[in-house]
Amino acid sequence: MKVFYSMTQLMTSSKKIFFPFIFAFLLSISPAPGSSLQNDTRETFAKYADDAEKELVERRNGVLSFFREAGLPANQAALSRGDKVITNLNDKDETPGGIIHDWIGAVFIPGVRLENVVDTLLDYDSHDEIFSEVIDSRLENRSGNLLTVYMRFKKKEIITVVTDTRHEATLYPISGNKAQIFSRSTKINEVENFGKTNETVLPEGEDHGFLWRMHSYWSLEEGKNGVLVECRSITLSRDIPLGLAFIIGPIINRMPRESLESVLETLKAHLAHLTRSSSKAGS
Image (cartoon, rainbow, N blue to C red):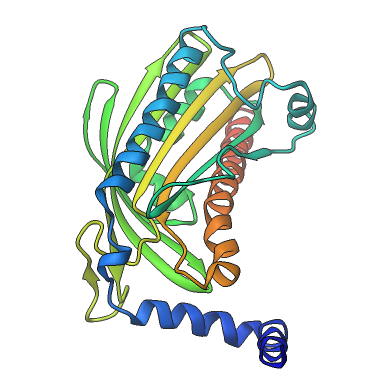
């Protein structure tokens, strides 16, 4: 009991020292078989994402309401006030060897057109200039509504995690005022020793497991006053090491939410800035 109390004191009074020490310790350990992406983890995520996409297709085709969260009356009131809505859709995850993070967020962007939002989301050459967690991005190929994309993400949460990611993004125009965009990661590599002379890109799935999969699904609808945006973000990370859930569990679990919030806030602010600039130029 005395030892536990001492550890609790250490954690509460010295978080700035204790948490970085734990993460530095984890990163100092070479990725081991237990932290590698296993087949059952990969298959569980693929099934989960497939089920989510089937639901989104039903929403696209009008079988279900177009929006999942943004259409709820309580959320509509919040969105009309200018607030964003964020919901966890998988808070009881049981993925073997990993964690599926499924967050959905919505925001209303006034004074913009559907094409403004679509153009911004598909302008991957500019994502590193718009979104704070993207430090490099480029469109590698486009064939009609199918795009292949490279992006390097940098996430700082006590430690800095950098990942090289490749994605396939598909635009689904639905009508003059509705569209969906599906973005699925096709390859993710963690970057070790970022910015140093010994920077190394680790083999896919043989890393510390901060990010193994990253899918984003956008639903967009233009109204007379602006565009309602809903984004569902489904990502996969390794499971929490035994005995460390109470330390790093909350941090790993909140990283996907924080990233989604940041994307929605930044998208809204960026488009608002473009709208103001366009208004000034036209006056």
